[in-house]
Amino acid sequence: MTKRWIVLLLASISAVAEPVTAAADTIPDYSTTLTGNWGGTRSAMHNAGYDWEIVYKLDLLGQVSRPADKAYGLDNLDIKLALDGEKIAGMAGSSALLYVLSNRGGKPSALAGHSAGVDNIETPEDANTTKLYQAWVQQNFLQDRLSVLAGLYDLNSEFYVTESASIFIQPVYGIGAELAGTGQNGPSIFPTTSFGMRVKAQAGGYYLQAAVLDGVPGDPNNPHGTHIQFNKGDGALDVLEGSVPLGASEDAPDNRLSLGVWQYTARFDDLVDVDAGGNPVKRLSHGGYAMLEKVLREPGSDQAGISGFVRAGKNDGDTTQFDMTWNAGLVFSGLLPGRDQDQFGIAYAQERNGEKWRIFSGNPVVFERSLEMTWRYVATPAVVLQPDAQYLISHGSDPALDRNWWLGIRVEISL
Image 1 (cartoon, rainbow, N blue to C red):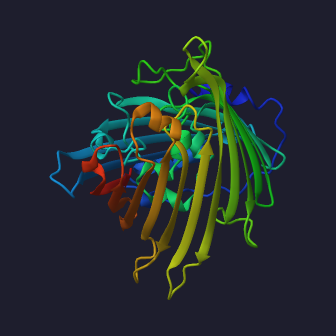
Image 2: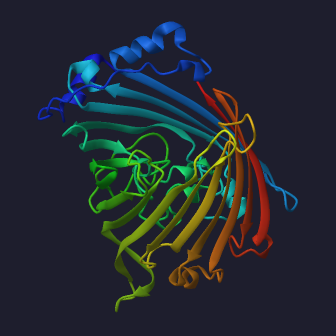
Image 3: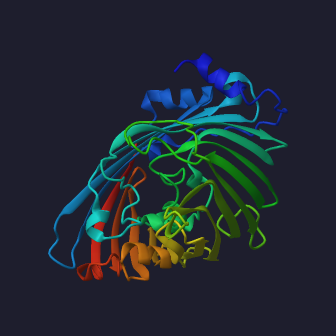
């Protein structure tokens, strides 16, 4: 990719940008990465407007409560290049991101009987691939109080996300399962994104953001590589989210109450209802969610920090498996003396199989529940070891899957 191409990319949304005062630049601490400063190359690129972030994850997990059919290995490689438009082209307030994603490994959710999955780096069957995952440009206005973003975009990078829940490995603590399972190929989230636009206004700790995304991410018939298609009938996914701060500090992102609503513009087949001709009735898929996140105790020299979250979501229940979900958790920071960066988390999740889906599938299970406990152990600034335990209850119609334990470990390396 040439510098000229990057300049043109940033210029496409910067023509009307107003000047803003640049903040003092701080060189990132490359000692927290395994490969360091690349002999000074990284800091030189940072000064020129190019910042690299490379993270590799390796997960090993298996079922241990009955004779395990198989142990699973999964991996995930994130390669991100953040671009500073002011440093590269003198365009104040402009930025861009290029993000390559690579996934390989097994499919443990099939054995677990959990439609929402047990590992947040697992991809669907036959979908292991390397792809351009995100590629967007952003322009800030009004001293960063307003921003506009356009391009290939992960909705869950800014919507339906709580910071304290991000420690957990089950996918349900990312975006809610009642939204993750919607659409023809899911919403624009891991592992396949779509082209869209996002507008965000923020001030005093409050924010309001809206996104419009292509309703069918990628190519449902070809999960390999990157596909940007605008086919007739795709429609759009519209999402609106607002948030208010809780407490005195507007700079604390994990003290807030957030509400969101979403709707697809295309219609989908009802799982049960048919018209006079015997064809499925077409329904609009829509829903909403709420998130509460709060620091319950600040970390100190003689006490661990505690943060908590509660999240809930509901959809129409006509076209998808899960019509309601909720989850909650606690995260403890610095629980052991001398281990200030370590975190321990415990969380509970519940997904409700909608009435129409139970009729459609013949599966009588109403609630699927799970408990997760995880320890994020910072072995070195560049290497994190994360043992994880999950207890699944009533996942799938197979009585043998009613209650089972999964144990695993994640190795995360910052390169």
